[in-house]
Length: 265
Ligand code: ADP
Ligand code: ASP
Ligand code: MG
Image 1 (tube, rainbow, N blue to C red):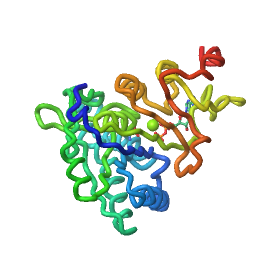
Image 2 (image 1 turned 180 degrees about the vertical axis):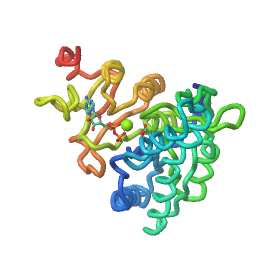
Image 3 (image 1 turned 90 degrees about the horizontal axis):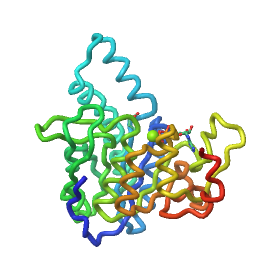
Image 4 (image 1 turned 180 degrees about the horizontal axis):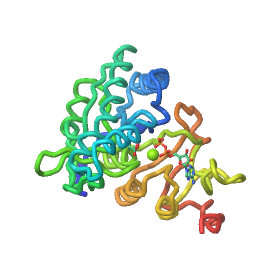
């Protein structure tokens, strides 16, 4: 992945909200209220949002109704619409709170990918559209999970790919990245499946990559690889959580993980 403006001195934060965090109009409004507080404090913020919970699966089911062999190009056109719904609604909710905000699709946001439909890799990010929003005092609300390839076709990044969008944008801008989801942070195992799973205050990039590759979908693997490569400060917390001590930091070296490494093997 090549980054434009990697030397940018801009500092701020990317907030990524997953499907469960934006699953209803009420939840979108609650997230908007939280983002509004950050924006009004003067900090630069980019919002990345996923499709409303269940929407991507609904779209896949609709597509399957059309036949047995589905064109990956058309799947990407279809699936990218889920995130577009959320970001336009989120921008409207922010505007209603008096915060200038603008939705951006992946391609409007300069997210270039290879042409590997349904599992595309980001090759390049041009942050010009984001910088333009900042210069106008507008909060950019970016559709996760999507980009554009060299032929001008819409691509998607694979399931869970909004995490990758968020981290890649943070890397491009030199921002921190907060991933907000439906659990308090990263646990030693999936807290929904494993009784006694313990929440970690920090996890190293390498251990988190191992966990993601072994199915911990709280962070998509590629997103952690990009965070490691570009040294993005990554935080995972419950949507709307105010106390960062309750979440998990993903860092270069996590002392706590060394002690508990066996829990992941
Ligand atoms: P989002 O919609 O916010 O992207 P995901 O469903 O992709 O959220 O990821 C969050 C889910 O990841 C949690 O609900 C949890 O069940 C699951 N999960 C799996 N392994 C872990 C883990 N080790 N720690 C925390 N959550 C985990
Ligand atoms: N909406 C996509 C999915 O359900 C991307 C994401 O949520 O990160 O996989
Ligand atoms: Mg996810």
